[in-house]
Image (cartoon, rainbow, N blue to C red; front, side, top):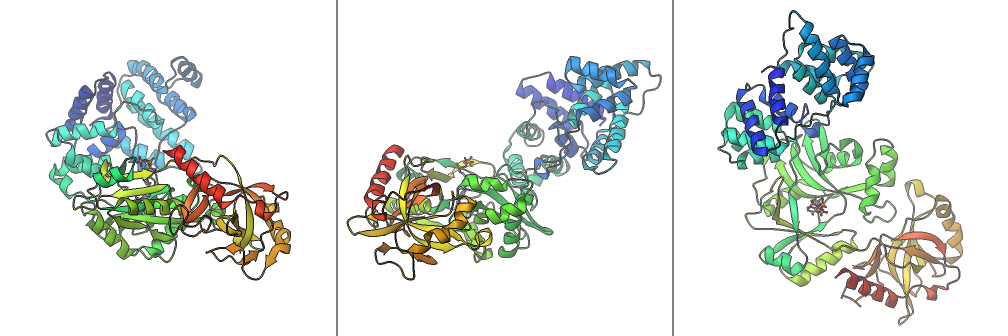
Length: 584
Ligand code: ATP
């Protein structure tokens, strides 16, 4: 197909707003194309050269494109600039000036085909380094001078990343379904969901027909469109929906990640299928080391872990890792764990049609949990009490809720679909406790890395009036300035003791104990139940105390308060209860 013919289809598509009409023009277009052209045509029609996950973009700058048009049409730059200012679209400018030129030509040059155009655009997108600009300019002006004015219009928009025909991936799938599957999109859509590669799907259809869709498997290196969850408001509803017995997993509050183990290493994709490999070298190393497979696609949540307390960090902290520069520094400040919850492909086998429990078993078989790759904490539950207990544990371990999962034989991995096989249940906690709390310092943990020579975190306690004890509520590692942090050992030295003080009630053993003496002001996200902290232990629920989630030092030392003036465990119980009222 000539590119100019393709451009004529684009003109027709652009002139309609009706989806059905658009689809039928696409059907015509695909019918007209050769088998080896359909992949390129699919990408080009979406304004791309490759699927999004490759990260390859054209996006040529205005200046370069304007220059190329001026060269191709033999028109002065000034004229191009003036016209551009008038019409605001370099595509229209190219069309206009090439119209004038072609009226003057005696011989029309040989028009380029779609594949010729595609292969030069591919070269343009890959060209980099010294001389790249000149090379791109020469290629583009060469292409433009061979095109019809209408063809030039669409080519210019394409190279600038501005081809907006109103055609989405799903519109193309509809057209392909009309052409190859009597309008039934099911199999074609599934193939697309498993590979996220519309060109590959279109070409397979053109070459082998619908049968090819049945054989299409996930491919390591091509992201699977993620399975999504529905949401319900109470454990009772979730249990009923899933038939009374279900799997509950911690719902980690991090970044969803698909890790692909391929021949040359590990590739990571985000929930939006972007390639996030460069941002997480630590996850790459960990997956390569702790997941035993030659080729696999596993899925999990990357969560920041506080290097000082070992506790999970809130999502916002992890977002600091989403940067292009300073990746190395961020590695030390925000180390991560990846909590795997699914496996969709393993050493040649497509597992997306295998039920959840079997997939989980396969996952357990290949993961070595001794490093920073972990399995999502999971439990099979068949009563509401156990559901609630598991939920509270998830919250107190730094998660945002639970993910309930169907365990029947129907529980396949539904790529790209939101359905009732997974149901999320989370409590929207307030992001800040209304009030600060004042807590006694009863212990400390030695710092490592950047915090070597001072403390990594302090162990804090509330005062229990009834038993005259200091009961732990949290480890505090954030909110300090560097200066303050390094002054801590000296500042607290006169409270240092060898053994756990008698009035301190703690299940945690810090590196250093302090006699309760210093009181520090802390802000937190909320109060949660916790099996490891002793404040109000057993008051709300057996085998659990209260903890402060995501505590931060405000910078205020309450020298005006004696340790017995610290926030009491009774106050924490009241804060916990009023927080519940606000939530319900
Ligand atoms: P959604 O993904 O449902 O559109 P969202 O992006 O706002 O919504 P959430 O509401 O937070 O995400 O819930 C779903 C997300 O929970 C998943 O996309 C995944 O990143 C995360 N998640 C955490 N733990 C798990 C788990 N154990 N199983 C599945 N997903 C989990």
